[in-house]
Image 1 (tube, rainbow, N blue to C red):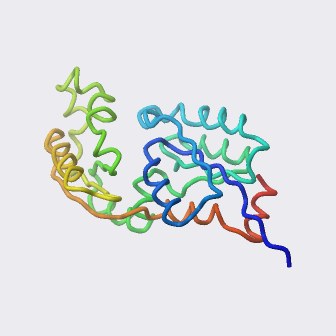
Image 2: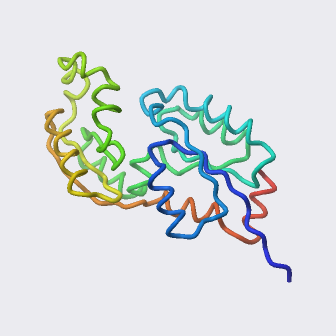
Length: 212
């Protein structure tokens, strides 16, 4: 029986996931995956995500056997799924990165336990000042903090590969927002399984390649 050739896979992802995706690719030997990232600043402008993904996938047609879109819904209200379906791609599971990192079951329990929770990942903890504080204009208008976060009660840091420095940054972010700090280590969660599945060899990979 001839050897199955692994599919050539494009992973088009949010820049906020770049380090974690590279970690998984290296650890799992996923050398048939090609990573390209869109700006992480789209985190604050989710309405722009579908068009940005559409433009990049259009230019990538015919160059890959399949595509994994490295976003969850991410606040696009289902519009990203239309783009994903148009190109025969697949995307990460869940509504946002907090869900696929924690897994749906765990995140659902965390959200239900305390509705007023603001979440950080490693990336958001590291870049809190730029993505959250300045991104929401709080560097210019700190008086708006309570308007944005007055209904929150805790900041939950869902860590992937935490360091003392990242934990300290997350704690400082909670203090600036006036929220109780908690940390839960979740690792890579559904991100890892999605990447491994996308790189899979054999009939499943061939079937998905034909559809893409």
